Image (cartoon, rainbow, N blue to C red; front, side, top):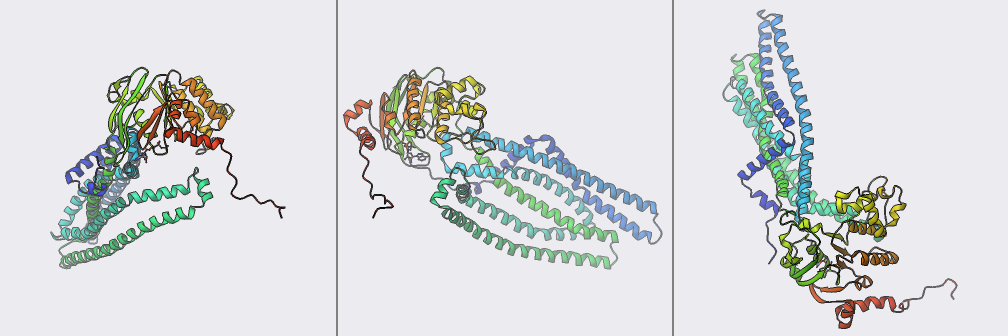
Length: 622
Ligand SMILES: Nc1ncnc2c1ncn2[C@@H]1O[C@H](COP(=O)(O)OP(=O)(O)OP(=O)(O)O)[C@@H](O)[C@H]1O
């Protein structure tokens, strides 16, 4: 199998048809409506009602001006003028009311929407397979999706309502203006078009630019995060590679900057040309209407409709066209969100439910290849381990030990071969139900910035309040230091939040061990369980491990042979293939790979330390 060749995400999304865009539009509106039907409705109604007000205002203004002109000839009463003023004031008050209610509902709708879309992203993230997280593209999509949550869906909805509103305004104001001559409205509308075309075109280009930069932006963020990370600050300071990180960070910025400058320059040039052509068209329309005014064909009120209407129509037309292009652009961004939400998930509950303890695990010619790679990291791996037995996996870095554990714990599915549980194909069973029978401490175990109790009980959240259970697991893991923390089990841990107590690497590892013990499982997996422990802790842990694992299946990965030798069976992996297996004594007798690695480590303890390369100089030496 070769790695699948995929077109870049940009090319895939650009290729989408108008039909797909409409589907995305529909889906976006669905998101908005579901986030808050009440606020969606109020927002739409207030905006549409408000859109009819400009024409009403223009018309009342025209009547008022015409009446004033008549008043000069003594044909209009003060009361009649006051009545028109009253209507104008009422329209103003109504406008303010609609806009206040509309803005408030938009704000609340935006908040609900942000919450509900974030929730969907988090739901989706929690359904994605562990495999998906091994893939950089997933992170790109996740980042893009998150970036758009705040503004895009609301943007689409408000622009769509805005479009409808603009249509109402244009139709009503246009009807008033059309009375001044059939050419007025087309000319004024035409004057708005160039600006909109420019803004639309460069909006799309801006989107494409950001899209192309996503991966590099992620690298740049990562470089920045290395300089602001609490866990890495020691190493960064000591090795002093801040300038290197800053330089690389800045190089990315400069690359983005060059692209941005080119875009801004072209946009400014085209923008100016658009403004110029618009001004010329308006000048032409004005000249034509002044000719009618000079001929006495239109009233003062009519002229006011033209003058005030120009701005109104221009705003409305550019609002209309920008609305269309804005919706188009926002939909491009929404595609990022949707394509993240459409990523295939692995249903961890699919399959027959597993129940009861796991008595045997058998790997039959199991192979595995990471997605989008072209190399098998495990090939033809076969072994069996039974209840009460401990199996140790040994091998040099990168041999495939952790990958094997991910397969065994059903986090990954084998690319070839079969895993049998109690003699039945594991693929038949729902991963989640099988995983309930397994507990694990990973090499890169979690350090949760929560209380000590939560750190342990997360292994079985239904027993979060089982304090005696947590205490028991803490004791079994030798994590007695928890009792001395202020607040004991309830002590907040980690330095991320105020009041948290930071633990040492070994203490965190003991808590992770407690977490492993807390889950009542028939398979225990220890991936480097003693790496961060001191010698006494390691020996205690191994002692406890022997007792804990008596009636369970134990899988152990360790580079420490003092731990490994306790296993009933030791499997030696090399380049993803099992090269030896047997008990410690058998493998030593074979004098193969295991014996060589063992001797190498044993020698490190037994041999005389090598003579120092140069003797330290003593002050008073001659
Ligand atoms: N997400 C991944 N994508 C592609 N290849 C990977 C991925 N994770 C691990 N590998 C590769 O798979 C091989 C086996 O890795 P694995 O982590 O299983 O080794 P290991 O024996 O546990 O090593 P160590 O002793 O260093 O923990 C390595 O060559 C590694 O480069």
